[in-house]
Amino acid sequence: MLKEINENKKTLSLNRVLYLTVVIIIISSVILSGCFQSLQTQASEKIPAADQYAGTGSGVNDMKSASGNEKTTDSTIKIAEKDGQVEIISAFNTLVKNNAMPDELIKYIDSNLGSADAKTMTVLLEKLEYAQKTYQEIAMQYLFEGDGQQKLQEAFESEEELIVENINRLPDGVFKNDIIKMFEGGYKFVNLEGSYYPIINFEYLKKYSPYLNEEYNDYLDIRAVESNWVYSRDAGLAISWDELAERMINAEKYIVTYPSETPRKIETARLLLGYFAAYIYGQDNTPTRDWQTSIVYDEVIKSYENTIAENPQSAAVKILSDYLAELKKNNLILSDTLLNSLDKYLNRLIKKYLLDSYYMVSEQIKNIGYQSEHAAFGYAKLSEGKYYEEYDSATGLVITLSDFYDVGDLNDDGINDGVAIIIEEPGNDSVFYYLHVVYNSGYYIYDIGHSFLGDRIKINNLRIEGNRIYIDMTVHSQNDTKGFPTEEVTRIFELDGYDLVEI
Image 1 (spheres, rainbow, N blue to C red):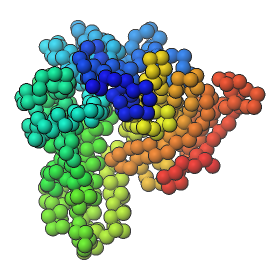
Image 2: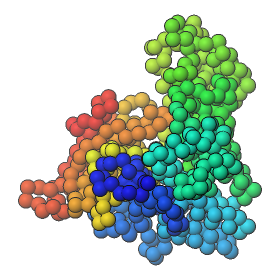
Image 3: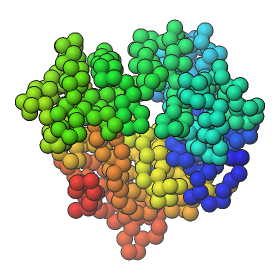
Image 4: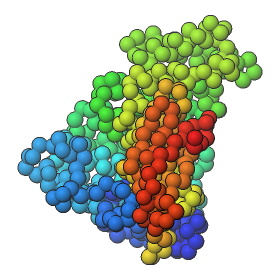
């Protein structure tokens, strides 16, 4: 069973980190049985309440306003003070604060369908999706512990068979109940390289369509197409070139129609850029060109031409048309030189729709994985800027995104990257500060390097100027005691290729 606790924090156990993101919007008030109960307990341990950060010296923004009320999102702020709407969100936030699981969030939303208006439903579903993302990762690790995969493979020959209607193929017991909880939490399962993975089932979430505005429904439609059948499997396309183009166009239409910067724009932009990149680069097992001759396949060229002819108003298609013209000048040969220059087309699409704006990059900085020598497996995935990992019943690792992060182009590719000060508190009274560089590859943002800044220091400012990173900080002089630095310094860093170096 998975509820045994391994005393070694580096051991792969569901009672350890599991690359866990820490987010306030997750729920754990429901008491589950057996193995999944230990999974839930672990998740709750990694999602500390706001006051658990108080007095740590981490510099994390206070989670409460001066009046003591919980801060609200922009979406919440815009909600009219209509009867019941504020109360619905307030009760939901209480669930959030008390850490129940996605199935309990869904039950709460379902119980308020007759009362919540469209703006309130937007707030609830935004928070639900954050919760689902976090528990998706937990559930994935759970399924790879013990014999979970074996049980699923013995009961279901394909992902088409692994549906809630066939749940009785699993023998009664803890594992069956856990899988039911995943279905009830809004997940489905896909089979990748012979193993089952849980993903958010956006088709299931479309049951809320009558209660949502057009913007959110269009978002659910786009996400449901992808969750119904993911476009990439086992390093190859799982759909046709024309289907890939159609998904790309629909994602672009959403961004054109709804340009406001929201979490939904971030997710749709990721899809748009992923589709566009796959369309022009191909994938390892579905290349656009013949490996021997480097000539682009006829079916790919025909798809390009059809997409261009059918979508004359699309900016993505205009960029694609320029790429096709360059290919034709090169006799349809996608040489290595040309292949290595394709970033310019992706970058044009990013800039066209401001997909590397401060909001778009900084919001992702709050929710990606960072290298950490203190975390299990050397990796900590933040959610809303927080991560927690229990060492034992008395101590644990707290990792937070500080108030200091910035966005700017660090490598002269024309696309904004990011930098962040990450604070790690490993439970021994130390408060370690690290500079992390977040590289923007176009459709994927990730941590590529970090540098230790000091223990119990003070950060005064962080900024990107040109391609350089400047940190104004107060550090310890020779006679200073820990926790009381007095020496003002400025450290300067830059990227050398993919390496972070101090100048």
